Length: 296
Image (cartoon, rainbow, N blue to C red; front, top):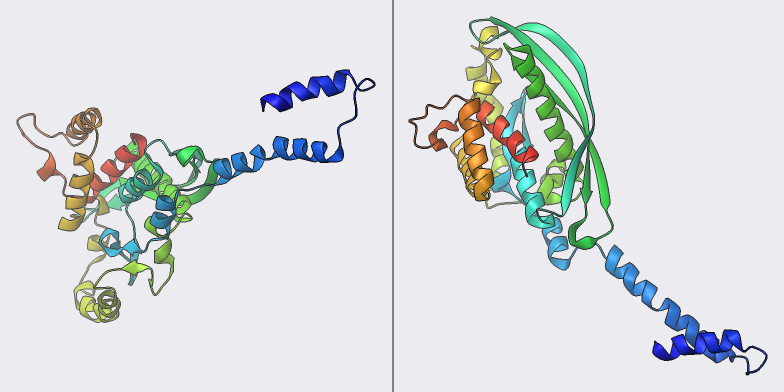
């Protein structure tokens, strides 16, 4: 590099006094000046590391998959906090960012809630979220997703808040899903061939037999039962354990902030030593999911 730097002013300042550089010398200079660029391009556009590529291409662990009733069928999905945890694990805590670029209220109406038919509100929002991945100093990789969220509450403000949060979380999951199986891409295959578990075949069989078993229980349900506030639905033990494991993995300042905010939001008595046994309903799950999104 030193030789090349010294030759250039000599050649340019004494074109008439000295011999012109040969074609071979010019080619060598050209090679030297351009040889660095491909290396820089590969390092900046090389993208994910081998470990990250392996993680993104890995099958989805069925232990992370949840199911819910939707009409007469069951739908498989990943919870928002689980998707965030996977993004932190694969991209790094500082390797990705989430930005809500559009939110719109598309429906708002008064309605009755629960078996007691209490007056309340139903609200629906749509949202668009942008995910930018910059893991390892790579060229920013941008993905976007659109989602919808519904909020039902006796308080109109709470209904709006729930709907917005659900819409943003849904949009975030759809955007991250494009990165691969760990974010739910495998669930879009109806046969779920990229969802691994020793019970992979069993759920398919159970799914076919379940409607016949569930039908007798569903028939007696009254409209009032179907209108039950879904935020009060109990969480299954597996979901509770995963939530607790994720919360306990938070840095100490974030954990203290989470505990204080949870106590305030759900009015946990000051004499209660722990909040672990208080996390048992869908509304707790949804609030924690939103907290993790905004404090990741």
